Image (cartoon, rainbow, N blue to C red):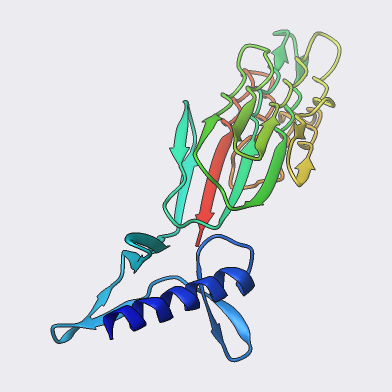
Length: 248
């Protein structure tokens, strides 16, 4: 009887392998469609227990047919490193944002001449989605630019992924004769399914520094610093970001 049951299970697995969706994970046929099983349970010793790893005995050895998966999001706002693909993950969404630059300084000649600095531009932004992620994914977060430098580049790489987003550009410094010009060059991005350039900075004027540009990602990441008023330097931008979201 046990041999017949093992053979039946083996036939079922062969049938599933032949007709199930070509995606990682464990699927069942239900109500006319294939549905991904995320957390199967078995009744054991009077209680339901989550199955972490499913195995069947076939042809003299054990074969794994299921690994439990827990969705995971890794969000990084500084530094560099890598993240491993969680067991059972079937999809990965990667987002990279370049760092924002510093706004331009204002100027005051001490004789009534007051001019404001221009705003810096925002960092680029890229997003990409892949199926069946595997291995580890390396990442690096772009710093905010300071002292007239461009914001840092953020990047991510690994299986089916090679992405980068450059930082924004600094705002123009005010002088004896005029307000600082807002940054027109912006951070850009590549390697994603969707790539967005950062927004430009605005010129200074009216005693206030020009507003810094932003990134399409939002949330304050990769923002260009505002220009300074006639009595201050420009504000620093904000660092970039890298986010890896694994789903089951």
